[in-house]
Image (cartoon, rainbow, N blue to C red):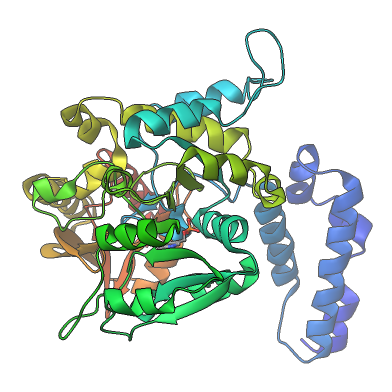
Length: 463
Ligand SMILES: *Cc1c(COP(=O)(O)O)cnc(C)c1O
């Protein structure tokens, strides 16, 4: 069919609005927006035809229906992580601990208690989180802000605006998503005073950089990289002694930080938050959604005088967390009040990190067996050992052993399979490796294999 014929065939916007598939959407979207949207898509379609694209009226229809579907269906939703990266920013970083769903549901019912006391007076919204942080970390006080990048910005702005902060060249980290120490430092108004070299920094390097304009010493955890070979780092304890000698606060940016020592379970040691406080760090900050396993936020703890000063900083208001963050973090921190053997049962991130290999293997084997049984010769599914990652700059570069199911489907390509699974009602995310579709069963939660099988059934139904 030629260009002009197709152009003549394009129905009017009013006609399109009466297509039964379109009127189905009438209860979800006002005609006001619907008509504009259809008009816009029709215009784009005309332009494409004008540019010589070979399209049919059926393509116009599917363009409109796809856009309506995208607009009216939720994008933020429960999804399955078959990628094997435990803290995956694209998948919401930390999966919440047990019980947080109820806490979130409770505040979603109507109004909620956020910053009002038993006498009906305006209260401090940080009070409860502060109490939990005091108990769990031993710090004099605590406060939360939007994320750890915000926490670092705020701390540096409050303690060191217009003055110097000493930091080792080995700790000038960049975290994915454009968090870079030198840039945060510049934004905060503090002046970065780099000392040492990439691989070696000595105590004397810090000491000789101290002058009358020095405001603080900063230590940053090398979250997502390691420096190996001929290296030297100054310990936190030594930095604290130096800080005491010159009356300078020591700031410890832990990145992830941990409240439970995972080295007891044979994993590498992530710095413990309570150990930084015990060692005498004046201010410690870390993320709420890395190993803490809560909502996105930046947690700042430390000496009362600094927390009080930070609360008065105008940036604190700009970086303030809302009720959803507060309720989710409160519920997460309450999990850490439990005895440790209970924490590792309730806390989803720890459960995934400590998931026994034989359990992973069993879950993977079950999934592969059912897929093979259901699809026979149409599909191949093999169980293999592999490695998962912690991600999110925690436990650094550690790889955790795991089991995967590698799938190959006869009729469709791996990329098509992956795409269809991503677009399933419960989106399933797996990775593609050469000509195989890979699902890592460390991050697939118990019972989710049933959803995956259902997804395969619906997706491959008639292939
Ligand atoms: C992850 C990380 C940050 C940034 O934390 P967000 O909560 O993602 O903003 C800052 N510093 C270090 C050392 C980190 O590892």
